[in-house]
Length: 350
Ligand SMILES: [Mn+2]
Image (cartoon, rainbow, N blue to C red; front, side):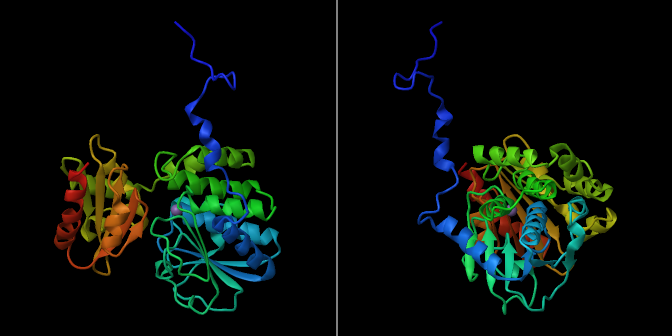
C-alpha cells in the first residue's frame, strides 16, 4: 500500500480538521459579539448590585450559567441576587450554590442591571418587575432577539454557560472548581452529552478546560443522568404507552391524569421527547403535555433535517433548530391537529 500523500508545502499529511482556526474565539477588533462581551463586563465593573435571572422551568444551562455568573460577580466583589419563577429541578440542586437561587413571581429592589440568561424575551422569565431595570440579555437561541438594553446573542455557543465562561476569561477571573462544575453541567446538558446542538471542536476544548479547572465529569454525569427520580420513570412509562409513529415522525404525550398517577412533577417531563427521537429512522419528535392551568405544552426535537425552531416560532414559541417548544391553547386533541399539521409536511420532505 502507498502511504497517504504529503502536502508538499508542509511535509505532513493534510487532515480535514485543520480549518479549526475559523471557529476560534473572535478577536476584539470591531467584532460585535466580543464588543458585547466587553460592554457587559464594563457594566459589571461599574455597578455594585445585580439581579441574575433565567427562564421559567429552568434547565441545566439556566441553573449552571446563573450560578457561574454569580460566582464571577462575587470574585469581582459585587452583590448578586438569583431569581427564577419556578423551583430548581432536583437534578440540578446539587450544583454548588443552587440553594442561593430564590423562587419568586416578582422582583423588586434596586439593581444596577438585571442579567437575563437564556431568555429570548423578558416574558420568558415569567417574572414581573424587570421592566424598570437596565436589562442585559445573554442568549444562544436561534430565536434570540435584541429586546434588552444590552444584548449578547451567540447562536454558535453550545450553552449560555459557554458565554459566561468567555465573560469570566475576559474579566481575568479564576475558573474555580465550583464554577467549572456548573459550566461543565451547562455544556453536558445542552448538548445531550455532546450529541446535539452547537457541538464542535470548541465544545470539547471548553470541556477539557473545565475538567482541568476542577470539574469532575463523572460526578456531574452521576448527578444529572443517574439520579433520576422514580416518578420520572413512572411518567415515562405512561408516555411510552402513548407513543405513536408515522414514517420519520414520532410523538407521545401525557395527560394530567398520567401526571397524577405517576406522582410526577413538571420537571419529570424533561427529556421524554428524546426517547421518541431516539428511534431509528425518526427525524422529528414531539412530546405533548396537558397543563394544569389549561393548554398544552409542546416540546419538539429534530435530528437535524427538520428545523423545529421555525415550527415553534410559527406557533408562538421558540428555541433551537434541533430543540424547541411552544404552548398551545385548547385541548390535547386540538394540539395534535395543530402540531401534526406542521410536522407532517416538514418530515415528509426529509
Ligand atoms: Mn441553553
